[in-house]
Length: 401
Image (cartoon, rainbow, N blue to C red):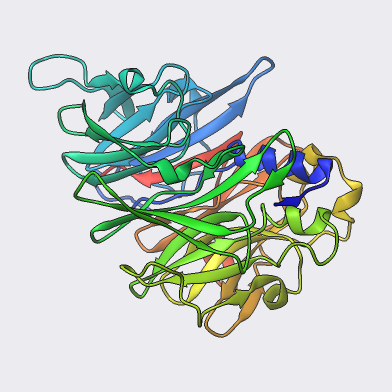
């Protein structure tokens, strides 16, 4: 195991703790009768933080009135599926389903008249991370990293279906972290990494857990030692691409020279038991920058990422400064041509969610630490279109219907 400096450990730990959400979803700008979009904002308060879930008839609005939003605990997650919205309460383990009534979210009811909610506490889940994926109307997964298990539940009747173990998620002496969970055919996959918060060490591999989408079983955990600390994965032309960014690039910078491989991109062909040995992209060499984090695939051989473009030596910054200050810019990497393009029209910002796919449009937030606001942009490489500005950090953008 390679050892990180204490500063590096703090940075990686903070990022693993959930500073950003990787996005998905489907939709469009809107404007047609019946269009409904979900925008969730994480807003800091003097004592804690809260999530405000708003319903919009279109995304090209000027502002969002949070007084009309559904307020949830700051540890909650919000997702949409099949015209419904689901909240995952990170303080109680309760999952609640909502419908839209006059542009506001109200709690849904089941056919028997009961509230559309259930608890995962009986399966040992009392807090939620981002590892949620909808497979069908009657099958969804929550990847429970803490208990190394997969919780299977039914979005239609809001019930706990089953659980099955994923023992490979556990590594003795390490805490498990995961990226976004994605469905591809009969497979579900998720980046996974392991960090020891006490010794500031990590397992020096890039890894991804692969699950069956139809059966209660783990296909396997696929590992590669060509790069370390996986963060994001996306599908392009039927293959899966795993980005290992060395803890958002920070493990590379704060470790001794030559001890950590550069951030990279790996390829997995569904059904194989290893990553493609003939595919490897050194992303630091591609961008000419040592720090980058996250990947939002666009399905055309490119992905959107955040790049550290500041002239400030990151080793001179405190961890919270590196996370929050406006030191990062959005860019697009073409991993087939091995080139990168900086999106100059989006101002530099702090660490934020990676972004969301909405009707084949690619949206990213720009977080302004000085103002405590986020602005939504649509990426149209090499340019971007500005949408609305909202209070706090945008944590979810998706179409409801």
